[in-house]
Amino acid sequence: MAIMGIIIAIDPIVDMARTLVNVNDSIVAGLITARRIDSLNKETLNDSTKVVESTL
Image (cartoon, rainbow, N blue to C red):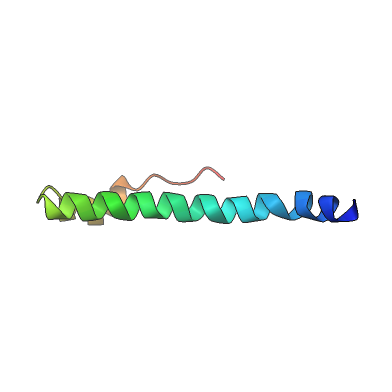
């Protein structure tokens, strides 16, 4: 029964890592697709004024 407490405590951290990988994969897939169909605007991609800042 004690192992369940450890699993419940660690699972959110592992879940955050899974979410990070999924989000990064989605971003990379979108960039690769946009580049392959020649719709990637590199000026917009590299423009630091269009970056959304975190509110954390």
